[in-house]
Each structure stands twice: as C-alpha cells, then as structure tokens.
Image 1 (tube, helix red, strand yellow):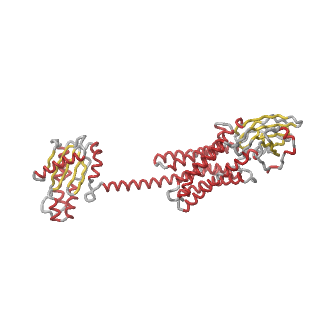
Image 2 (cartoon, rainbow, N blue to C red):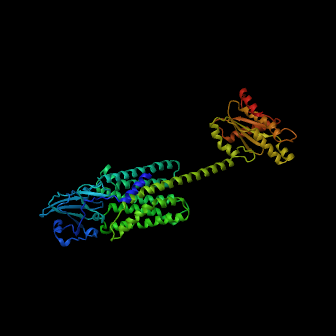
Image 3 (tube, helix red, strand yellow):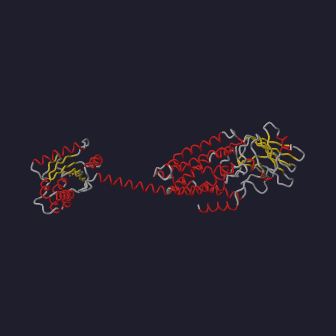
Length: 564
C-alpha cells in the first residue's frame, strides 16, 4: 500500500498522465453554427472562425460548435479525434485537402468508442493523406466545454505507451486495494451490525467503480461505448457523494455533531443522487448552462460536509479526525472541479490523478477509523453486556448466602428440567425463630450462611434460598433422594463447626418430590411443601418423600466423603 501511494504521488509530481502526446494536434480555431447550416460552407467562411491560440475561450451556447485542426505536410498522418467524454448528439468529421476535396463522416453519440486514455472517447477520421490540410470536427449539442477544450488529433489511441501502461497498472493496483476494505467491512458487520459499516462499504464500492469507469481499466476489461461510460460516471459520482454524506451521518459519534447538521445530511445525500440522475438522464434540458449549474449545485453539499466535520472536530470526535484527514484530497478535488467548472475564465479540470490518490487515501484513513470505532463500540458493548450480566446475577442471587433466589430458579426451571434435573426438595430449618430471638439476627445470618455451605450446589444439584429459613434443591441422577438427604443431614455439623456457642444442634426438615414432564414449578413446589409440613408434623428433623428408594451406594459414598 505504501509503495502504491509513493508511486502515485511520484507520478503526480513528475507530471500528470496526459491523454495526448507530443505529436498530437490541437485545434487552432473554432466557430459556432446552427444545425441547419452546411458544415463545409461554414468551414470555408474565414470570418466565422475565432483563432486565439491555445487558450481559446470556447462556448457551447450554439447548437453546433466547429473545431478546426490545421495540418502541415511534414506531420505524421493522424487517424483519430480524441476528446473528453460528455453528452453530445452527433459528431461530424471532415478532412479537407489542399485542392478543396472534402471527405466527411458523421457519428452519432452512441457510436463513439472509448479510448484507453481514461475519460476520453475516440472517433475514426476520414482518410487523412499528405494532401490533407485541415480537419474539421463539428459537435452537435455539446454539453460540456471540456469536449472542446481537450479535443486533439492523434496518429493512434492514447494510453498505449509504456508510461501509460505503467500508470494503468498502478490504477489497477489501487482498484485492487479498495477490495480489501470491503472484505474487512463484511467481517465487521457480522460482528457488529452498525449502519456506518454498510455506508462505508457503499462509499468504497462507488469509489472503486469510479476508478474503473474513469480510467482505461473499463476499456481494457469491458470496452463499453463512450457515452455509456459518460452516463455511468455522472451517476456514480452522485452515489459517491451521497454515500459519503451518509457515512459521515452515521459514523460521527452520537452527540458530537450539531443536531441540525446531522439532520440535513440525509437530505443532501438524496439531493446528490437526484442531481446526478437528472443530469445523466436529461443532459440537454438547459444545455449551455446545465453542466455549470450541475457543478455549482454540489457546492452546498461540500460546504455542509466541511462544516459537519469541523464541528465534530471541535466537539472532540475521534471519528471526525480520520474523516478530516482522509477526505482532504477528495475535498481538494471537489474544490478544483467546482472553481474551474463554475468560473468561465478557467479551463475545466477534473484533477483525475489527484482524485485517484484521494480515493486510496480516503479509503485507507476511513477504514482505519472504522476499525478503531469498531473496537471502541465492541469494547463498550462488551462492558455493557458484562454489567448487564452482573446486574442480572445480582438480581438472581441471594445477597446473604450467595445462593440463587426464587426468581432465578423459576427462570431457569424449564432449562434445568431439560438438562435432566428430576427432583425438587424444600428444606426448612427447625425452630429458627428461637435462634434469632435467643442469639440475635446476626447469629441467625451466620447460621443461614452455614446452611448455604451445607447445601452447596454441584454439577447435579442447584440450591436456592426462597427467603427466611426456607431453601430449595433441584437435583438429578438415580439417587436424588440420597443426595438431598445427605445435604439435609450435613446441616447440623456444618452449622456447629461454623457458628460456635449454640446451645443445641440446628436441624432441618425436608419434603422431596419427583419432577414430571408436565408439572409447573409452582405445582411441584406446593407438592414438596406439603411433604415438608408432614415432616414437621411428624416431629421435625426428618424427610418426607414421594420418590421410591433408588439409593446408589457408590454415589452415597461419594457424597458422604463430600459432606465430611
């Protein structure tokens, strides 16, 4: 990427890629005419011609504009007329010999071929011989001055020299580079579905298409008609401006752009697309001034974009820093095109080499900005998700014992049943009120903490504190009754070891019931609670179960060791 950047800058500094060569012939005079006038007759009328040298002030006000090229006898015979692509109706070409003989061809706009020189069309001249002294090109309904200003005759198609091919290879490398951000954006969007990633992809794609369409790559790959490329160039330009505006709209962080500027950016994006579609579809509505008005209509968009970026920079936006640097070359290209396109005293310039450099620079910087923004947003979302998970865990955890609370066990019940948990036990401490009354609530809390240790959850057991001195166990396996019973019997020893000074053992009663496929949690709880109160009525410190004896000695031994 650095090599391509330096190579393009070097190419720009040494000299812009020229569509013409040293043997090209530029027009020496121009004339205006109507469509009904005979071209050869106008050509013979010297008073109709304006000849002011290389800096001629062309006008497209007339229906037909004629360009005259003077040919010397010693010059290499020319074969083509080349000029910048822009909408026109018909191109007439006349070769006039020294004896007055005239050979003429007429080419409708749709028949014009694309030149290997980016942005140019080419037209075959009538036979030009050593006797030919003049070539006249008559353009019917020209829509842009550049078609007249940059017209020339050449012995061959431009863009075929070794230097031109090297430059085309650089452009091809640049186009290939623009594919990589699209790959990155696809990965970014899968991980983080933010709209600015899509708009950056749209912007990158439109810049890639612009490079292909405005350079010789389109001719080398597809060779479409010249006017089709002209139409596509206009349309893609509007899409590029629109996607750039929407990228800025969605990329700048919330609260770091003036609300009015953010609100009007989508309208200007739609305005850019409308301008391009209208200008490409109806190029002759106000032909003499349409190109100038079209160019000037983008000035408010450029102004709003610059204001939005500057305002965001002043508000501390990190995203705006990447945009300010990345868009600088393209903004300069826009200013060059705007000033030269609106000012009639200046020759229109599109600064294509600077544009190519700007495309790469913009995509590189904004891709870095997207990557950084992606990391920041992902970090913020991960932090928010962790905080939400923590809050959820806190909301589902009993703050005293650290066990799950009823809300958590009810929420997880169906999932646990699907995982094979097949028994529910309700455990209640015996005479717990006497502990609170006799030793204080602080000691009572210590007892509850010790009970939580005795009931500690494992891979096959989930423990929950319902409130007060009541607990729930969810169990799975072939010996769930034994698992629950061992935990109940572990309570007195665990409390005695943890809370010294109690007058007697702290016991618990328990009711346990199997979990069926259809019973709701509340139904199972009521059934186990009824068994619990049967155990209480029978004298406490015991269990009542509706589960048959399925005790496994091996599992029992493991649990006895755990309890010890």
